[in-house]
Picture 1 (cartoon, rainbow, N blue to C red):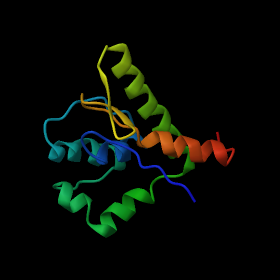
Picture 2 (tube, rainbow, N blue to C red):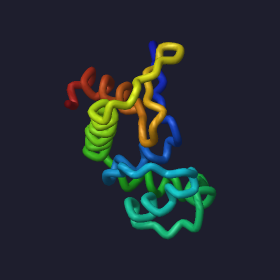
Picture 3 (tube, one colour):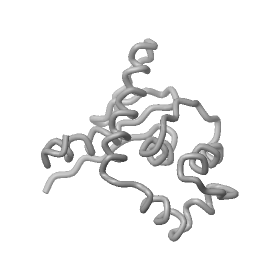
Picture 4 (cartoon, one colour):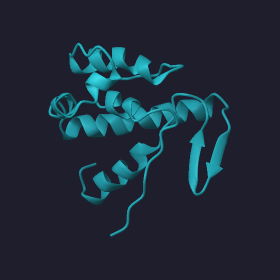
Length: 121
């Protein structure tokens, strides 16, 4: 079995949001993701700690299906394409390519490969 990890230059929470909706904003602190998380999942969490409580997080996961995963891949790809179009520098570190600018993520790459290997896309 071979695995490859993904990268998010700010937080995994962006990846969660992208399953439901676009999120192209640049945040200065992780706690600011609570507003788009609440909007995306129809929740009223007071803060990120409450969102990340196991039962709350699982409730959000249960609101997603395979179509949401495919949409998240597409949304994440568009973010990275936009970074390239904006002329941001693509950095490399230990085999990973990333943009320092927020938002940026490559978590979608491994997921896209799995979906293709399973002939789901």
